[in-house]
Length: 470
Image (spheres, rainbow, N blue to C red):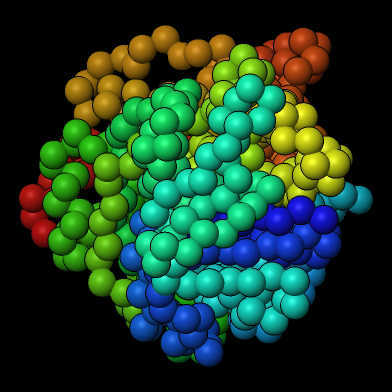
């Protein structure tokens, strides 16, 4: 049994804490925000302040890959989401009409999920965590510093000190503090580092709000959750209790589209998108929320497989974070948390062996998702900026060429449509699905000569006119 301290009580931090506690470890979760878990989903949505979570009331989605982790590892949390009014959503229900074979197949259950608004998801998980005997969750406990020792000739994190002066010893400290994690500064203050880090502005900004229906139903979704429409994209996500989120994703540098922060202009553009216009026919339950300045970031404590510090593990967004429009964050974080539990179990208390094994597991299983998302985001941003500037986009990467070909070929091929969905719902990356050169060549061949499908919406000139006239 290991003594484990998890820094951060967001969704992935609590989920990791639960998995580790149920694997017979002694786990303490330290959350900076002081407010207790509300008693109900409604109270969580209306009154729960979570300053430590950047997009707490913006659009959120539990992808099927994340649902599968909950079902296997934390079934009581998944059941709690159902009981709290979570929306059952099957991403393969609406196959494109251009696919002849519309029959369901064995294995299609991997495309189903139960999803909810972020406050509701955290309220459910927080309630389960509070009832777990082997898990201690302490809120309002910011960490002041790390306790550093030496093992194997390396700095070793052996615990944490709180602002109160209390010291908590640990065999492992898990950084689950999210995309704004303070761990690099804590390590630097302790004389460790700098750690390896890549960071760049994602280049996107969001304008969105939530709606609800009067009868508890969720409107049909006729497009993928993230739907590109020229120089902007629309994000439409089902949620719990007859609620749903709608948002525009634009390039940060696209000044005319900053007008979308105004509700009248936002509504005018949405009504001009035939496949999405019906989503405005509900009761708004949030103000217009904007989010920008998002950083794509990747951190590694063992560059080249050689640990610089032991006794600490980066988890979920503290390890890597990207533009959240693909809805992968929580689901990939859950998969990462399961890997953490399994790696801890296999190391038998050797901190250096754990550090090496955790780096290997993360780099082989989870870093590819970061690279895949980053490549897709860069390609989409280049496309948006090219449309705005009236030029051809720069030559795409090989992965982007393959991904675009897969999207086109999938519109008429039931097998490839499932391959494409696997990448959207956090089951398998495009690169892994099409690692066989013969499979990749077949996709390129099927897509050759076909015009990529596009959902209807205003072109750049029409979009500009809508924003000026509203």
